Amino acid sequence: MSEWVVLTIAMAAACAVVLTITVINHRRIGEDDDPSETPCVIEYMTMMIGVVYAIVLGLAIAGVWEARSSAQDSVRHEAQALHEVHARAEVYPAGVRTRIRNDIDAYVSQVVNDEWRAMAEKGTLTERGDELLAQVRRDVTDYVPKTDHEGQAYQPMVDQVAAADDARGSRGQSIEATMPGVVWFGLITGAAVTVGLIFTLQIRRTFRELLLAGLFSALIAFLLFLIWDFDAPFGRGISATADPFIALFPQIHE
Image (cartoon, rainbow, N blue to C red):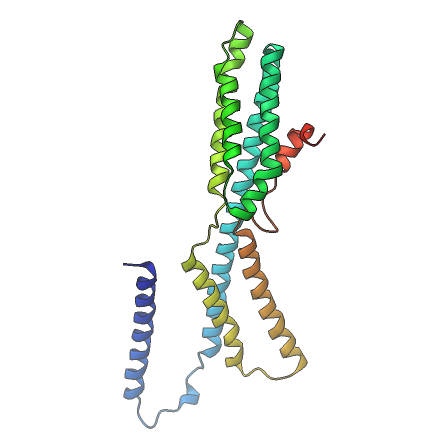
């Protein structure tokens, strides 16, 4: 059964139960009942809906911010691992060292200049990036150490290439939006209900009330926009950046 069907049934069932109980209680009320003696629940309901929606908004913002931070950490780990390979290659012969470093620089340049744009526009990594990282792996693993010093550097370099590959995979998994459609349905519906409750409180056309109503609606819209912007860690304004690559490999811009 689709999650949307389950959601529809659950919401309809909840509404049906509440309305049924309300109708039954109303029929049991005597003609001498005085409604003015019963506390009005509209203010309480309005307050509770606002509180519940504020909690939902807070959780949504925390979730997308955590996803964005995780994506940025993946970038940092990838750049740091490649930087370690770049530095540890110093112990290798000049020809091998140059080949490893040139291939790492080519990969970093591809990520910063081309792949980052592809992630934002197409939501995917590039095949060229895969090929260049595979070439770096071959450069490191195919070389047979000739001395003890080279042998001591060999395995750490292999491990760092594997760490970079793993971080690249995590970066690729972080491209897509993290908020499912059912959550967006709840956020937008909740926003409509919360803002709509303003009109149940008999709002008047005074400047103060209109200003507060406008600011409240603008705040809800801003928070929803913030969630939407954070929801694509590499594709929108407040997104993860390639700064770790640029900081550790300044030579790619020289």
